[in-house]
Length: 417
Image (cartoon, rainbow, N blue to C red; front, side, top):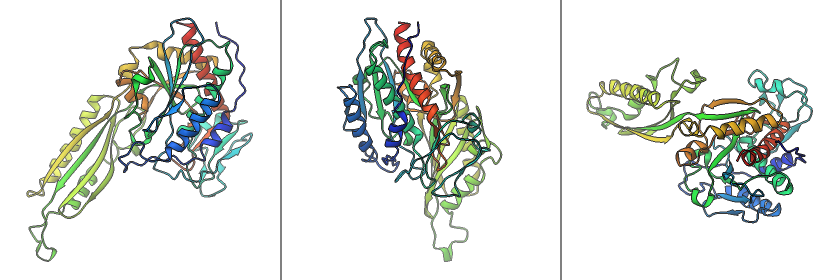
């Protein structure tokens, strides 16, 4: 039976505090975390966790925050972990974030005060239609906001406070994990699953309120290395084979109306060039490859290699190498073996006063890799929208609904044990 719960939300205050701390990750760094400033938020979270009663909260040398909420039930309840990432995307500045709160949103576009050219348009954000009367948090338009994923961090922190302050809410052992470097694909590289000791987990890193995602893209990286032929430009006729021009020819041959992020949606995958560098004699092309099935990945990689081979026929003295590097796989392969993980979350969303909706992510989460590391881990909504951009936003009421969902979910696992 569901236990009546009273919530005294402090999630907004937490969120506004966290987003002012710059935690951008850096894909060019080889350290872990990739930027030391991520630990600034980690240290604050540890201090706050200890203050609200999570005595074992700590920050490890790699920038991970671990904490435990002890069980208050005599039942044998699976150990559940709630996880969010602390870093923000390197795609858009996260320094000197100045959050703005639009109280009692009345509808229409939102012009951001720090840069009026940045407008959160209803046409681009249909979810705004459900926010009339709610409070919307944005940046001032000069930076991203950081709701991805500091909304999730704040929601988990608020739920921890509720659970530790209300002994009548019965639950098993709850584990908390905050990770660095998720935005650059390294979020669980150094996680200690033995120390974490969880049976199942949930990332709180999704978009629309009420949604739970049990499926992600499968992902590979592709690196093309081209070796051209150098010659003095004054005497190059019939001799020079320019590696940069070869690389450019490959990009130009990619499909124009399909198979790219800008031309696909729903369950369509893509080939996406993310970088090109080089000089006359050698060049490198970097791609990411995404699809919901491994067959789809293989088809796109075969398409890419076919384009390369065809281009190379015009450059008989040059060579190439194509390296495919697996990144993560569709979590659904693992999560479907444990239907109770999603079923319990759907019920928690109902008890939080929302209509649950199950869906897929056109991307990945820490949960993608955690699932294949032995910790089944679907993704729960955090309320964040327009990620990685200066028009990012989140609703106060959606964050509060996420807190209720987390608390109800902890109770449901105990109730059904």
